[in-house]
Amino acid sequence: MELYLTEKVRLGYRTGELIRMAAFALLGVIIAASVFEVDLEFDLGSVLAELFMLSMGVLCIWKGTLGPVRRQSASRLAHRLAECFFASPEPEVSFEQLSGAIGGKNVERKVRHMIQKGYLENISLDTPNKRIMLTAFNKVAQKEQYETVTCPHCGGENVIRPGWASSCQYCGSKLI
Image (cartoon, rainbow, N blue to C red; front, side, top):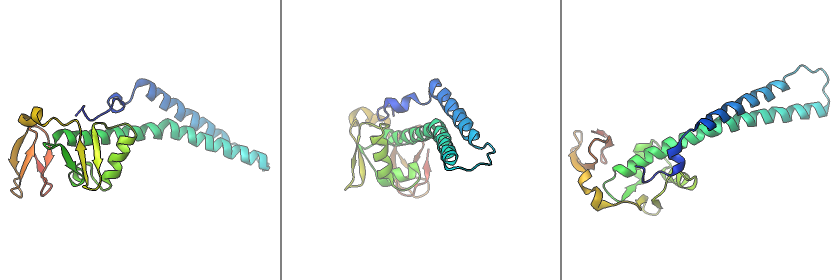
């Protein structure tokens, strides 16, 4: 699994990032709260200054909290994708196989985004054939790590990695 994740994903949250999140959020709340002072005079300069301060407060809150939370969400998605790549017995994974694992549509767009943002490595997109090529795949070394199981629901034969949760490639039911 580590073969497909970059250092950016492996680090996760660091103590410094948590402190920075809290500091930005607090600064944003202080700046935004300073705008809501009772002022009976409405001149254009004071209104523009208050709007500027309010936007700066919102920006600090967003930069300090939502940005890191989005990075953590992207990191979790990269982990799920890397698990799918690692569990694959073949040097390629179809977009259909991944859509069940990561829950949803736009698999190509999500994987492309993960590559561009530096969360995934050792893969390449084969868009015309709707698949992802695992460029670091070593089939000889991993051949003994897989077994064939029959799906209890549809009877389809699936090649899975022992001890890893998988889904049937034919009906989508869970395999253990």
